[in-house]
Image (cartoon, rainbow, N blue to C red; front, side, top):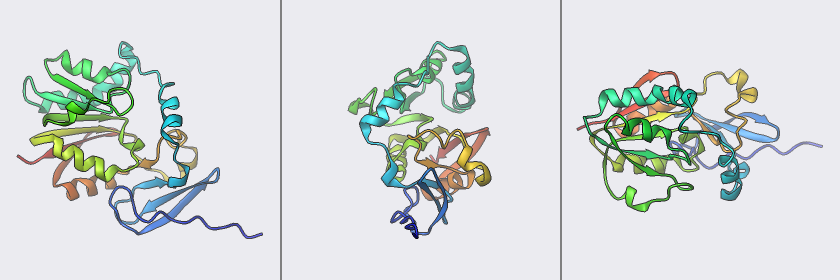
Length: 220
């Protein structure tokens, strides 16, 4: 019997390009590589529904009082603190149930609002603009990343900073066994070239201050 070939999504969820090739099938789940931005995409038919997704998020142990977790977050907290103006107002987008990063930034004099579709669905926080926005371990979960990045650009003041933390995808040969791929809520994986494409498309400047951290600067 000849197995059916996977059918590619209509377009890349990051850049909307239709040039997708099959990268690999892992445990019957196809993953597609975009020929333009080089994002790697889980086949949409294997995405979890919202209830199943939240059940996995509820298992995450991101204790805001854990010293090790706080050290992990300094990779993004320190660059934001170095660049944002004093007493800046920021948004922790996708803050999760334990907003450790927001607490760390608030302790340094920043005002930080929270938004998360599951744990802090506060529509009023999406009705203003911010000096900086942080997305820590968020963008790999997005079903419609292009729309979300456009939303974040609208929420960001001119001259503002968007800080993103996600594991950059680098080694195709190890993709199948990569720990980041094994999380079933991770549906899109970004290479540094993906983030470079995104910066050009949005008119942002990109910096990589630490491993797996991207800072986007919106022009004033």
